[in-house]
Length: 337
Ligand code: AFP
Image (cartoon, rainbow, N blue to C red):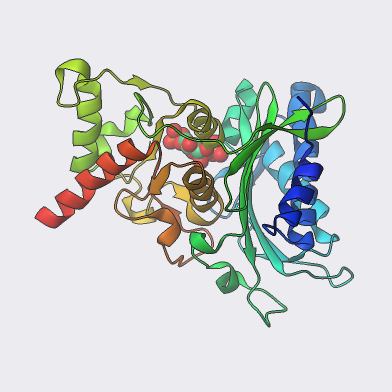
């Protein structure tokens, strides 16, 4: 089979009218930055990049050295290319403007530079997640409010998982596609086109240690899965939890399954654990484009009107039928109150 590089794929997408030249170039720049992050993560202890940076991000979470390095790589790579009006990151309170010395473009880039970073020191997969929006017309100095667009307006979304292989998964709203990094050649090569997530599954991912803090409909739903063949679902379910969203979502993209980070009593005041703008929305776009579903347990994630750059939301995503059952239990419980 003839291999198709990311660049060839982007040219095809341009010819099909799915992306314009600026967006296509922006994806190339992000991919190049992610190759550099892959090199840094692959070096491990030998690169002197493991451990704490000794700083906290704006969410009060301890930053790893690689969080800071990955953020800098993405900012630096994207500053001068001319495709962006501004960037926003998990690691920075406010959006980063494009320096005056560089030309500005029409896009806004949001990213979580290194998701799952608490897994780095134990050599478990981590990843980068990104979302691309159009900068509103007439806005030359984008502020946080200009990023607050619903997930349905995303022009592109993707993630890169730095695992045994470095893999990028990408959507422009015309299917979800996977590219594997050929390290010798230095190119991302198309490895799966038009990925489909099976509608049904017997595998779920959730942090079970939070069980006692969950809401009643979540307790009910997971309780039924755990009851297996003898329970109301009449089927045995398997459980997996990597605690790296990119790795958990990549498993679902590959063999199906459902991922949950529900609301619980510990995080209720924050609105959830995962961030809407650079985790939930891009993952929801990728999963929906692969035939899956993504909700907060109550409504479609991509339909939410964001209220803050670092807003958190509950996340239910993956195989459609299971997301529907878990969401139905929550909606039904709310209606009964
Ligand atoms: P870190 O980037 O701080 O490791 O958080 C990772 C994450 O946001 C997401 O990737 C995981 O699914 C989730 O947190 C794991 O959360 P728990 O530690 O509560 O299981």
